[in-house]
Picture 1 (cartoon, helix red, strand yellow):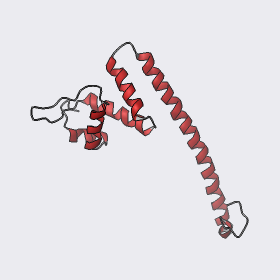
Picture 2: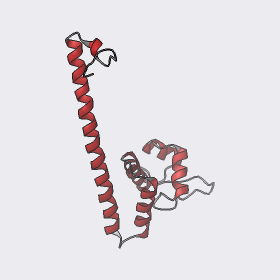
Picture 3: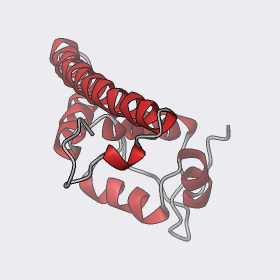
Picture 4: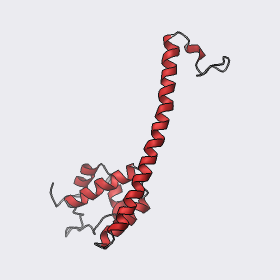
Length: 138
């Protein structure tokens, strides 16, 4: 990947909109100031794209923008705060694991409901499912 990428190139590479990229820059979420050409066009590097991929993972896994900004601030500060960065990552890892556990519980309930529906349909008792006039386990 080139180290001289346009905002459009980065949008395609990351799946983020041009608007989102501008927002990230305005909010200080990049690890460095994004340089511009003489005509004012932003120029990104492969490292910027790598950082954005990580930000996408953070966001998709529920990390608030404020926490991503704090992590970016720590990285920009440079060496000496790695323990603080690690603690942030551990906290988020715990959050994601708890979210996965909750989703696994939700999936178990839904899977049980799928089995109930399959059994009722196979036995010809589909009318009993969620029928307020008939007591059922639906």
